[in-house]
Image (cartoon, rainbow, N blue to C red; front, side, top):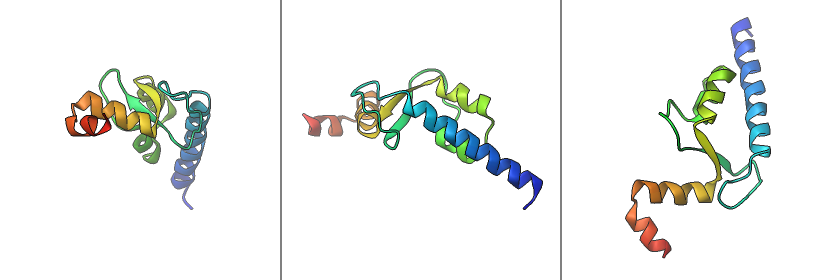
Length: 98
């Protein structure tokens, strides 16, 4: 394995653990769910550069990932879908829920 590949894998593993640790200490802002397996980053501030998961997959440096996280609120998958539907004006999903 090349030195660059080893570095990429190390960066990925370290950043993946940092994201898990972050999610483990930040419950869903809407319902309070604390299970990191279902928590997601919901972009609500600033200009979205990329999805946090994609930055992780691309072995992006932690400062860049962290900068993207500051633009987000943590939501569980269910609350994230609901907020996104409401925000985007996806009226038929909102109507079905009522």
